[in-house]
Amino acid sequence: MSQAAALPDVIRDIERVDAVVVEQAARFPSSILADVAGRRGALSGRIAPLAPTMKFAGPAVTVEVRPGDNLMIHAALALVKPGDVIVVDGKGDLNTALMGEIMCQQAVALGVAGVVIDGAVRDSEAIRELGFPMYAAGLNPNGPTKLVPGRLNHPISIGGVTVEPGDLVVADADGVTVIEREKAAAMLPLAAEKVAAESKRIADIKSRKALRPGWLDGALRAAGVLKEGESL
Figure 1 (spheres, rainbow, N blue to C red):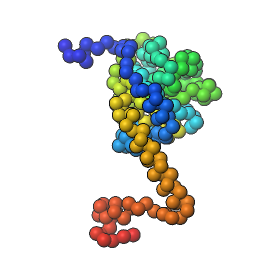
Figure 2: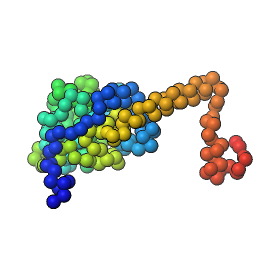
Figure 3: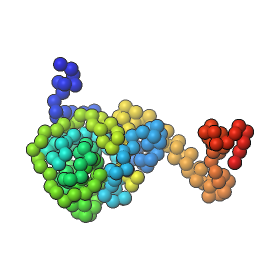
Figure 4: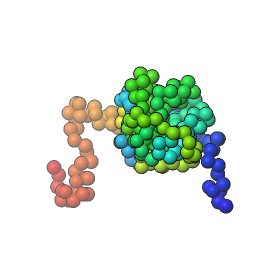
């Protein structure tokens, strides 16, 4: 029997991205982190915050459920630690809400940093008033069942991205970016460099010092739009 086959459905103990890395990563936009990570790790735009002011950063607690059943999300809430992000592979199903106000109140009381669901939620107005960061693929008033087994803290696929338990998850108005736990610390200096470079670029535009990027002609030549030696 393989090691993977021997793993229990519920894995209680995981290695989380370092808290210092989470604190520093929270200072950067999700777009900056996605760029320095090789333009990888950004979840599909259909998974969006209930309000544009919502944001968070934290380690992933991964949940896999069957469509329309939230039993394993309740299991996750029983095991999370303060600062964790619950990331749910809900199979993109929008016929049933997997979380609502009561579970979000529980998440707040437990110190959960935020929730990401590839599926539907409900009680959206109450969740907005609560201020709890909830990212979902849609809304539906139907309530879920609590009957079907799933998995907790196994690798999942959500929004086109593979998420491992303990990975860094950063979210803001633009969406959600996930970076592998082992790579997260190395992305921070790259993110700082990119922020500095973009700030200079914006300053040069505002001062009219450089109204187009310096790389444009070279990229157009490489793409065959301009001939060698030709410029716009």
